[in-house]
Amino acid sequence: FTIMDFRNATRLFYDPQFDGDPVQVEEFDGSQPLEMPEPKPEQDEDEDDNNGRSPIKYVVDDVPVRIIAERVQYMDKDGKLVTKSFAQFSQENLQKVYPTLDTFLQKWSESTHKQVVLVELLERGVMLDELQDQVGADYDPFDLICHVAFDQPPLTRQERARKARKQDVFTQYGEIARQVLTAMLEKYASEGIEVLEEAAEPKKMAKVLKVRPFSQYGSPMQIVNAFGGRDGFITAVRQLSQQIYTVS
Image (cartoon, rainbow, N blue to C red):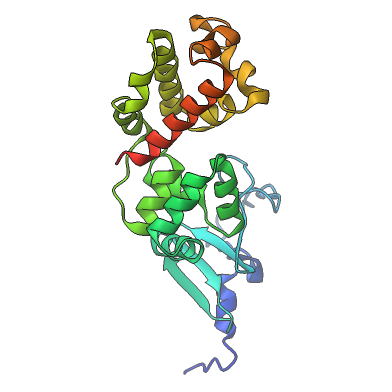
């Protein structure tokens, strides 16, 4: 027989909360005692099977979205289940925010705090953590976005640091200042751009420079003076940040 689904009720079968897990069926011939399976411990709604961590819930254009393997599923405005590859979904979502590569590059260049850009993308449903899992943890969010949204070849943070070392920003300063900038690049390669942004903030500058590897080049005051003063140090660090993202 044929079932006609006039109300699109079959979409409910894609909802794990609709009818729960399938019933376990056991066959036996009666010659052996019936063994009841051990009940599974109840799982908290906010936990998944990923080491008990809470799953990240995303909302894109007011629509709940969940990731299934490398695909994304969501209900469109007509109540139909839409399934897309994660790469396609991410590209479309990024291009809603930044329609062209130039618009993204301008926004990134103008922002002295890259985390603000990333938070805005997260609020718009861009799943940067999942992108990093798929593309690689060694890539800067900048490269993830350029690669996924605009098909640009990505560079690892180590590659960007190596290329930035060859730029003119290093030729302007003395030996101590160059060593400090080199240490900045090494921190970027291992940890990301945050350390450079914090070093360029007057309120956080001393805290950054008091710890290794920077402390081996002197006190915060001595390091800053190697750049001609606080303003010179801030200018050098911000120029270095610009150089990191201009090389390709």
